[in-house]
Image (cartoon, rainbow, N blue to C red; front, side):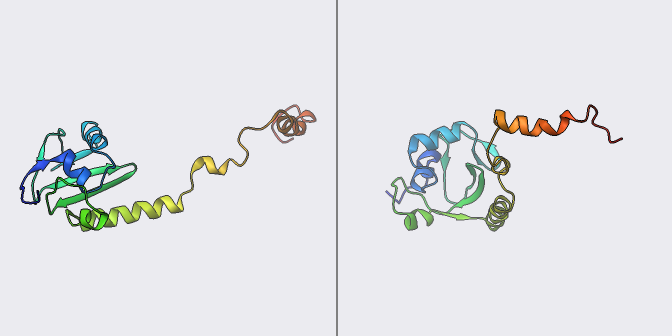
Length: 136
């Protein structure tokens, strides 16, 4: 089966282990999260060795060059032989990971969520003795 020179993009993405199921790969292609040569494609679009594929996996964008064609899903090391990630894509991915590591999730800074009725009363206590917000 490895002697083929062309295969559907959805089947290739599944065989190269970018997506867990073939139907998931098909959905991602239809949503425009997979592109070839910077153009949106259909799941039936065929890939061949040398094609450049750009895909989004969640927040992560990857650009890979097709190195091999397989219609069978193998182990991870086998799957990684089907493509080469571009150096530019690797550095961009590393920078994104570092940026995500350094910038905390905004919701994480809210320790206990919304203040309770008691918390609000305590917050408002300081305002009762002053009727204006300006300092006199």
